[in-house]
Image (cartoon, rainbow, N blue to C red; front, side, top):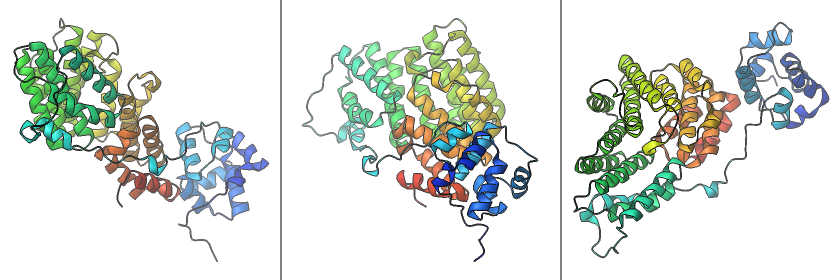
Length: 422
C-alpha cells in the first residue's frame, strides 16, 4: 500500500545507532540523514519535510547537497521534529532537552482557596478559630517566608500559610509599620490568587492592600499596593483601567533623588503599566513606560530584590520580552530574550516567567517545537507555575491543537498532564 503523505513518520531509536547515521549527524549532513530515512524506512521527501518542519523543496535541496544547516534554531527544530534521542542530539552537537515526564500520581490538584474567603471576609470565619500569633517580629518573619515561597513558585506552601497570616494581622492600631506589613501581605495574597486564577478574590485582596497602605502613610507601601491593584485589574481583563492606575501614580517624570527601595517599587509598577498598555494595544504608551522603567533601573544601578520586586536592568529587559509578545512582535521578543542570561536570574518565578514568554513568542511565530521546549523548560524549573496558571493552560491548549504531526503526540501528552481539555 502506498504511504499517505500526511501520516506521521515514525523513526525507531535503533535507526540512530547505526554507523552511517552517527557519521551523518557528526558531520551535520542532513542530506545524508534524509537519504538514509528514504532508503531504509521508505519515507518520501514529503513525509520527511512534514516531520522535520521543512518544505519538500528544502528536503530535496539538502539531499542534493545544495544546502547545509548552520542555524542552531533550525537544527533544534529538525532534531525535535525527527524525535532524535539524546545520543543522536549529542552527535549533532545539541544538548539533551527531554527529561521523563512527571509521574501523573505526583501531580497535585489546584490548592484549596476556601481559607482565603474566610481571611478576606472575616464575617464568614468561625467564632471558634484559635488565636494567632500577633507579635510584629513574628508577623514580619512569616510574611517574609511566604514571599520567599512565592518567588520560588512554591504556591501550595504559600496557600497553606497565608490565610492564617492574614487573620493574625491586627486591625485596630495606629502603627504605620504594621499597616505597611499588612499591605505587603495583601499584595502577596493578590499575586498568588492571580496565579491560581481567582481574579475575584484577588480584587478583594488588592483593595485590602490599598486601604492598609493608606493607613500606613508610607509612599513605598502605596506604590506597591497600586502595583497589586494593577495586576488584579489586568487579571480580569481591565487593561486600560490598569494602565491609567499606573499613569496616575507616575505623574511627573521619574524622581531621580528617591531612595533605591522606592525607585525599585516605582519601577516595578511602571513595568506592570507597560504590560497593561501593550495588552490594551497602546504601543506608544507601552514603550514610553518601558523607557521610564529603564531610567529607574539605571538609577538603582543593579539587579536586586528590594521590597521583593526583583527590579533592575534585567527585569526591564524581561518586560521588553513580555511587551513584545503582547504586541505580537514575536521576533523582537526572541531577540530581547536572547540577550538575557537566564542562568543569572536569581528568582525561580522570574526564570519561569521568561521561558513562558519565550514559548508564547515562538508559538506566535509558528515555531511549535521551540515553543514546546520552552514550556517544558519552564515546567522543569517551576512545576507549580505551569500546572496551575490558566494562561499557561490556554497556551498549551493552543499548542496541542496546532502542533504539526511531529510534535502532536508530545504536545497532547503535555496538555493531558496539565488537565487541559481538547
